[in-house]
Length: 597
Image 1: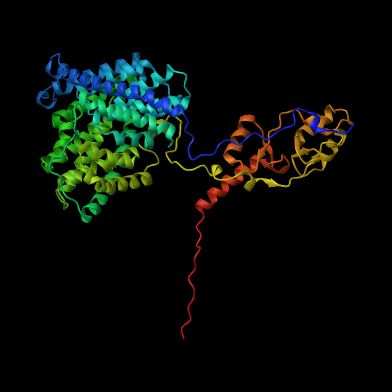
Image 2: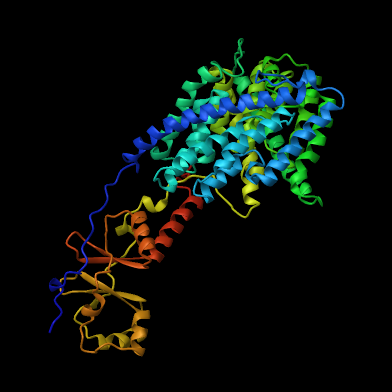
């Protein structure tokens, strides 16, 4: 009896192709944006709490008073107390990390990245509580850090915890984690646009509306809360801006190149110091206290290196600091910050980077045309960009931070120049090196997937050899003994695929052969065959092949007739061809020889 595929209900049909669009966003993006309002508000509240905790720790440690009013460390830093207070604070942090959670060690951003990429964006309530407390103790006792790294971790933990209480995917949890981080950064510094850019350049590892819109909502929610909780206006206002010219732009770019080289040296030095601590014959719980000894000694040399030093950043931007004082601050701050951070204590890196970059720029400003303020701003942008590999974030951050939107081209020139040097000199940034040392490499380069630009019909094997569904199964094993291919589509009389016959399956038939008279189509047609249309984008076909663990798919036209075969090898060839086109250097125009006379 001849095989009739029309009599079988399991003959494959072509699934309707999904709607193609520029973006993959759907209505859930709006749902996440609504939740991001709550997360953004929570991040702003956490920033306010963190600043109050830092003030409380500062007053307790240096003045012996129970107060949450803002206090400066420098007036109280004198004598033996300058060494003892940082050491005592670091001992507390070591105990919190040992018996609380070791996730509080470091400046927070690498831990947030690691949670996003490798931890399904899950952060624990313990981290949400211990990170701000440990950072407040660290900064309040004189640690040379800022509040931005801790608040990014804390805000991220708030977003993660909210997401974990709702039925969400890992991608949606990531969105809310980053939304909380952006909200915290916005509340501390008043830089919502830079916070959005930081999410794109450093934290999200994607550029999609489904994640960007909720993150932007959270940052703007925090910006709305900031005047009520912390205060309005730029954090480091410059009342008398300097004008800039083309010469200023060129000088800023040169400053960026030099600052990028310094940032690379600082990043390399940080991990050499960290390696030195790892070689010590003592438990890591004691490392912060050992690092604090260096901090205390640095405080004896120049008390301004203690704490976040926001007042010194303002002085650098105002141009009110003499060059000898700037040079001393630059050298001592760099040493104590690197040693303290390498010891594994808790604190952020952004404020120290701003101070170091601002100091380099201010020194240059005493020599270059244009004034000190504009180059201090440019140095800040270059240092942040080169260290964090976030050039857009750094440029926008510095102008939002100072209210100097007119200086954006200068900040961009320095930022891009510093970034260019850093990516050429160092393989990884100060943020990703720690993750790489844990055996987890990541790439911060985004590109369009070449498989999303090609249709199946462009890379398939056209008109493949086939086997008729009416072939007796007894002839199959003999055919594969001399066959050229590993698999053949099995088609009915109309040319429609009903199954695939592979060499491996034919070899198994040698051990347990089926009834030789049964048509091949009746054996292979079991409803599990997946087919794809020639107009389907290759990336979607690849996803189906991966999900179903299949190595080949028949390609059919609108009538279901076989016109080609798509194999994994075709996918690899398409990707390698695209990469080859990226690397090959070809001249498409040639000079014509011209004869004289």
